[in-house]
Length: 559
Image (cartoon, rainbow, N blue to C red; front, side, top):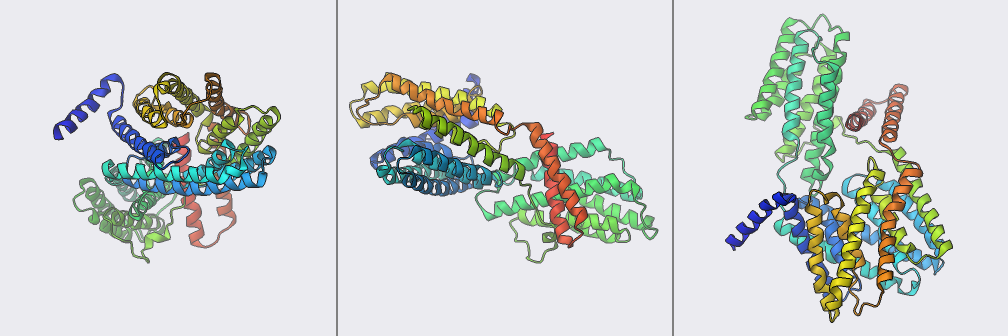
């Protein structure tokens, strides 16, 4: 067994010569195996669409256990909510396609809007609730009497797929080793402490230029952008990410203080002795962080620095959140609960919510679904349901992307590949099957073809969509009665979904990077105006400031 495992590892490493990413290939082959288990289990359970279980496995699988558990939970929650709404829409419409389309337009708009205000897997669950309703409502809209059977089928295939993803993932997926960015943020913090020490000794003067400040903000912005997935799966992970963000907020505040310090004359009471003591304590804290030997000494040194700088209220007020944030960060890193009354809690972490983008996403999704749906009602095109289903996914899942219209190119390519692979299976392989069991077993190699496409450097951006579409189209009903022309038309209808999504992002409240930047700047200006016009409680100011800092990082990252 060990020899087989070693040979498999060598094969994965050798795959790099052929253009594959070995890490991705290992993960995606594992997911393909889980998808095959889900497909076989759903078929054995007698579910009508067993391929949906394999789709759920691909959707739920993640590289780390915590992410796998949390995404699986929201996969199930979103499917339950979406299925219930889809069944309700079909029952209310009672075969009236116009009312069904309008109901879907409203529901998908709500899911797109709310999902854009949420983050990570919570947003995913909300978006999933939108297009799950579309899947239930559209795929058998002409038979409302069968909608409960379709709804249960959708729910149980999703549960089967998620269970397979959890089973295989829990056995073979690593737990994860801490929060990425911890070491980098501490190094930035140590550099900042040395800059502050120099500035205090120079009575506020600083050699830190605007370009260096911008470079450090960008470094923090890059780290912050990747934190959300690592908060998944446990309260410990969430608290660690929360504490890391608080530490970055304290650094932003200190960087801004350094920028403005030369214009602030320190009080006469802040003499050379106090400046030297504060600077020495800050340098000791920096050394403790850099050597990583006794990290708690860094927090203690920051307390001494603040006490030495108490004669300069501006400097002491700047150092206070740095010390408390570092204490909270070290506690979270070592899995120590932060006391309820700890002063770090006085500096909240508030994340940016894109209200402008959410409103535009809601209006865009509702308008696009309504327009295309009405055209479908008027034309009676048989492929309209699949086109509208594809659009519902495009207008929800990708609505929060910085440039979704550009993403649609990769999605369209992936779905086109999925159609071709599905046609190859249907017309080159399935004719040799003599039963439904034969159809199911002959599907399995094509699931692994999708894994290979998902892992190759040239096709990895389109591989996921290829997998989902080939499974959507491969329904193992025996005997197969559809003609090649019908299968081809169905495939073209599926590919038209991302094309229609591209048109919606391009022409209905267009989404551009410049537009997102302008919206972010506008929200920051309003935030500053609100802070100036409402000199309220200190905590309100800290909330506004924390949200402003997060928006600043987003702005730096997007610029």
